Image (cartoon, rainbow, N blue to C red; front, side):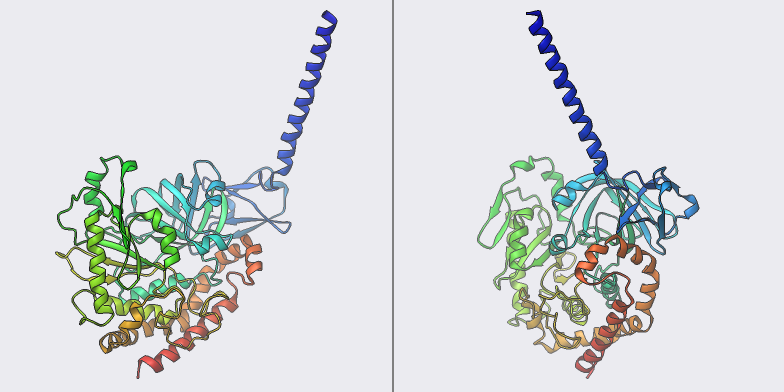
Amino acid sequence: MSKMKGILITILVLAACVCALIFIERIDSRQKNLTDTYFMYATVDGHRIQVHEQDGSYYLFLPGYVSEKDIKLSAEAQKHDIKIMKSANIATVYITTNSGNLDRVLADKDYKESGKITVVDENGIQDNSLGLDYIKGRGNYSWNTWDKKPFKIKLSKNASILGMGSGKDYALIANASDASLIRNDVARKLEMAVGIPYAATGRFADLYINGDYMGNYYMCASIEVGEDRINITDIEEAQSKVFSRLNQEAFEVYETRKMKGWKLPEVISDISGGYLVEREFVDRYNLEYDEFNNGFITDNDEHFIVLSPKYCTAAEISYITQFFNEAEKEIMGSEPYGRYIDLESFAKRYMVEELLKNYDGGVSSAFYYKDSDSVDDKLFAGPGWDYDMCLGNYLDWMEFADEDATGITELYLSEHNSIYYKNMLKHEEFNALVHEYYSDYALDYMNELVESGIDEYRDRLSASAEMDSIRWTDMYKEWGYTTGDGICYEELKEFIKERVTFLNGEWLK
């Protein structure tokens, strides 16, 4: 028996040794599989920034406000030849997730992870440092198509980042499809020049997440109801005093064939406003419908998602649906203008989209709002959002891809177009306003872009664009362009010149 016991002990010891060797081998394998730059980083202003390897070379991408003498390289980084590149002239955004990585966010656009954000302006002055409720993916085509991903962030409390007005929701736009990086900002500044209500610009920033340099991003405030955003009556705030005390998991949906809201108490006496809605084409509407649970389809088959209030009661969703149906009668020409729609905001919205020849114009991310009747009883066309595919920058499958800078689109050439502006252009009153806003506000801005504005953008962003182009070299090679290339700026200037020349002939007769 003792001999057998000895054999068993020997077997167990050998088995333990084998397991230990396997475990050690796996640990060693994991260490070998770590990227060469895992232990290569610099400590910069209290933040760790990882060294980036590209095609056998090592790069350290520094924020513009940091001096090379102020960085501290890790021991492993000191053993290698590292090319230090430094941005300039733009802000810096540091985000740290609670998990310390971005894997789950990148794997699932809807996954939310909390963390912390620190923002430093272009002069090196800390602008904000606060908690993040979450960072998540955003966008649809842009998220699924390019490796350089766009993100949405929600702050833990209201704050004005880089002077963009107090709020919680911000977007980090990647501009991966725009080699110039500037079309979104160009368009937003045009909106402001024209006087579109609540138009606002964003800020260029170098983005670092968990120490990894993510590239040049365009940070902007999300379109939402708020004093510094779309400043209309906030039904949601009033409702939340009641709804927040209820079990939200037990909320039931109210739905008919053409509208969807919630079976909730009618706690607001004045349901005339405010409402913030987004026009979407049918496929996108169906995709996002379940997420928002607030939506309606008009008599003319236009599809809208209600962004605010978040929980539309049956009475509220019925009200805004009927209001849009009445507004459409004006738009379609059966009623005179002036009772339901704010003609000036619609004319400005159309003029900007047409001038830019924006692929998404009137199709997607098209925002409208209505305040309470006691403030203003009309429907307004709000600020735009997506402008990366405009001014000559189109993908092969897009309707504008093979066209030059001429032509009047009427925002009706897209497969998923809106009927609104095509019909409004039949009215001389609307056309006269479009031509007036173009002549009085837009023309000088566009000419200034050609004369000096585009070159100023190029000079300002050149250092960051060069870092971005190396960070995303493989992606840009796949798509056949790179950020900061002088050719893209010259092509943009040429498109603007041709577009302005054409529209001068059409609108300044």
